[in-house]
Length: 400
Image (tube, rainbow, N blue to C red):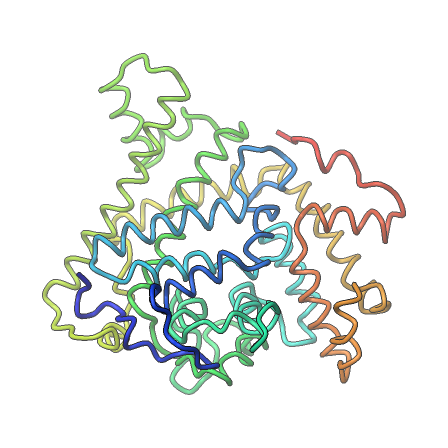
């Protein structure tokens, strides 16, 4: 049973292109299914989370990360009496707009696109689901519900102030502005509780799996984590309950406790905030104008310590920095090449190129194409078009 403040499927604001209701799926189930079956979702399996996709089979990719986020979102939404299908749909879509090579690729595209309206992976996800997926006879995009689009746009909170001025940067990313012009996503407000659940599920998932991947890579050890909040007590509890446990089981048992601490903290905060509130609709959640689904202040401070540790020991480790420089150079090579020679884009992109009115239109088409590349395809295309050779074998071998 859904709580009164959950998003009710029968009260959805609908889709841009009206469709008959399914006889066996809710609108948000259809959204979820369309996202899973999209080309952009499949490409996430070969896109970087932290480590380049070719550096090891056990590291998370954008696809495995998105699946883990969706699992956490469903768990939280169910426990809180929210709409699990909507929370899952937003979670599955939240990283669709990431370019190859993770945040490194995004940083490179942001700089290249600065003269043309900028680049932002959340905004690009909206562009994908409203425009770039071209499989349906009646419309471009996936024709998702307003609630799912809202969740993709602002699951991390408001994007503009009440006057429409962006809260980050000087201008709204063009992809977000274009989408908002069509759907009025109410960018100055908070999103539904389900969208907030998807956002905190993202934080829980990456806090957990970055610790796991960092240990596997050898960039730090369990002994290092014993010195940190949350992780230290988790390992200590495992050692107390299972003295002499073999290393891999010890690691897993400790990190699953870290995972549990984060989930339980979010549920406790949500229950504390939602319990006394007189909330009778999903709109009441938006009207609170605050993040209702969040970590406690204490846990948030402790997680900041862990994130700083990961930043120093993992995200800015010398081997990772070296790889970041190499893949940044690839994006910086490919983008101007396609700008100068758009005929190099695939045949199916040439109609868009022919419709481009100026360099800004062309740059946005090139950004769509480059951001859609997987890690391996970007490496291969760089080798073919720039280096004139086969890809550098070092990019395919584990670096750790």
